[in-house]
Length: 237
Image (cartoon, rainbow, N blue to C red; front, side):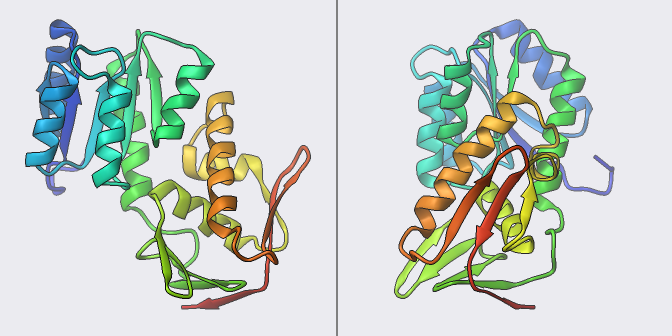
């Protein structure tokens, strides 16, 4: 983070007092405005009252755990990045986090430097440039506004999450050809590891549901390679 950038506000929820204070001090030293809360209920109250750029949530917390807190946050804000901190490394827990809408998942013990690097990668994606300078894609009968992150069919408009929008932009940019799995993972998730790959599968399923009302649109798995969006496409710059 450069000194010229405005400080980004981080909602940090961690019930381990020592770890929480260390994380807060480290993030503050890196130029973030980090606020620490010891449980999910306190974190939710702060989120409702304040404005934040990212949430870093411990999964196992008293009063309200990280998953429940993230679900509450997602009801009012679909776009704010969320990173889960957890002592567990169970696939089901990690997939549950991604289904709720997590942007990343880091297992304890971890280095604080790694956490900051992951945060910076997510923030670059959220605030950074899009794959192609296309304002609107016409996907079959749908209108996809890339800047507003909306998908419209007739009078029905769906607000996409940031990750859904980023993945659909990539699919549109490679429409009717193969979007390489590795390219999508490294562009959106930075790392093409197992858990990120499973996360992407979840988001592909979500996009299929969003687009299901036009039977002419398909998102096909291409075995061993990636995905192919099949649709009539038009672009508006």
